[in-house]
Length: 518
Image 1: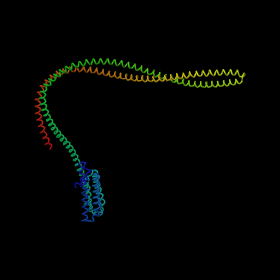
Image 2 (image 1 turned 30 degrees about the vertical axis):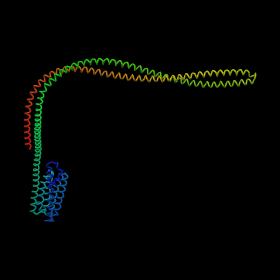
Image 3 (image 1 turned 60 degrees about the vertical axis):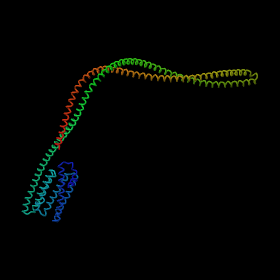
Image 4 (image 1 turned 180 degrees about the horizontal axis):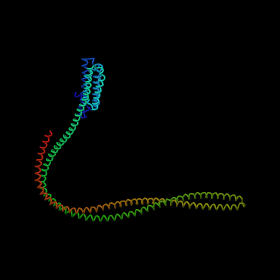
């Protein structure tokens, strides 16, 4: 049975305590209805099989709906299952009472209606107040309705009994409903109060548990701290003895340090003088670097100007070279023209020769023409001679022009080389100027750092003097510490004894807490 209940009620594990108990009671009630219904059917079969015609469907319906309510309850719908089983039980009993009206109306108020009173109690247990009131009203209405429906069929004695029964059942239903609600209200109020008291008890138990745990933790911490204090006091005592022995060594060491501080003070003064000399040299170097930078800037400007003029000269030479090329072309054209004139002169000589031959053939008549032809021939010879001389001059000019062009090209190449070297010099001067600028920046930083070093050196010198004074004070303080150390040795021994007592007290406190906790 317990396993069956756990299987059907697994969805109510996280519900409230009251909901768990009600769901378990509803499950047991459904199982009870199924068991009783089965026994009723079995008894009817054995004792009065004909009664199954009226009781069988009702009891079977109750068993079926009880099983359905169990399945609904298993699905987690408690309210639906409770309302359904109460309604089905009420309807089954009401139908059983109505079924007796045609056959035995005088027995109605002696059978089913009493079970309806039990249904009111069941509804009070499983359902809400509205369902209980509605169910009670339904039972009263059913009671009165059946009475008015059956009073004409009853004899006077049965009618008197029925009248008494309807009144008693109606008032019983009302009284049971009121009493059930009062009892349910009292139990609900008590449960709410118990729930509040339980929450308060849980809070108080939690507070007490936290107090015990805090006291236990405090006891443990106190024991640990006492042990640590004991160990620390022992260590402190040993350290104090060692410290007392070390004070003398420290005093002598401090005296040696004091003499060393005097030497350091003298060295810092020498260092300060060296730094002053270095700073003066750095300032002189800064002035030299500024002069070099200025000279480098002027040189760079002159170099850039020279490079610009050299590029302009190169361009002029290139233009001159182009002009000479055009002159050479013109000389070639003149030579061509001279060739044409020379050809014309040869033709004139040939014509004058032909004219002389024709004049000779003509005799005296052609003598004058022969003279003209002879003059033309002389003029042609002179022209040929002049053309030859002109050709020689042109050839000589072309040779000189070619030499000049070669010289110009050589000069152009040299000027180009000069420009490249000037550009290289300009680049070098730019780099020199950049290096000088960087060197000036670095020199400025070095000068600044040197000034800082000089300030630090002065501070160190002053600090060394102050440290020497402080060392003298330390020597006096160490002497006082030595006396205090001896006092602390005795006090540490007393603290060690107190720590052992605290350890014993914390052990007794922990034992008391464990005993109370159990």
